[in-house]
Length: 199
Image (cartoon, rainbow, N blue to C red; front, side, top):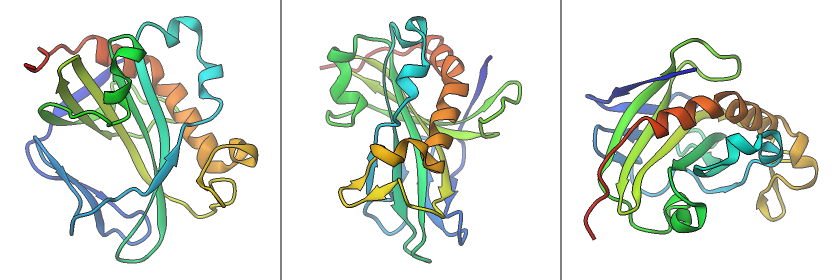
């Protein structure tokens, strides 16, 4: 499996799956939300995926993946995305980067596609590439998709994959997508190099 990675030269729009209005804009070296603010409001780790991975798939890369939910400002409908961040480092050394709790360096944006069509993986998706002080981080954005049924996805405590959430359609979709793309995403990260930014 191999992923083609094409640099963005013009604005790439992620649109609301319900009404088609823009919810997120990616440029070659930055991203923005039309009108400002956030386009995603809550999320949780995709339950069950880690157990599907072999020891070889879990190591040595550090990774963080989740399903996030947002709402369209134009039509009010909810949508979800599947996200995964990857770095070639020990998890404890780069956890703050993976969870966006530490300042990231320069951003470069790409459109990605599997070289050969792969069941469960979209035909293309957005990749943010950040040059951090601890090396290159890939942040893949799959979606958005309409969240037609929020049962098992959004509960009293917000977005959660606990309990019935493990079997809710959105969680199953996210889990199967990441599992199908896993080896190709790790291969892409390991075969892409960049110099860490200066302290």
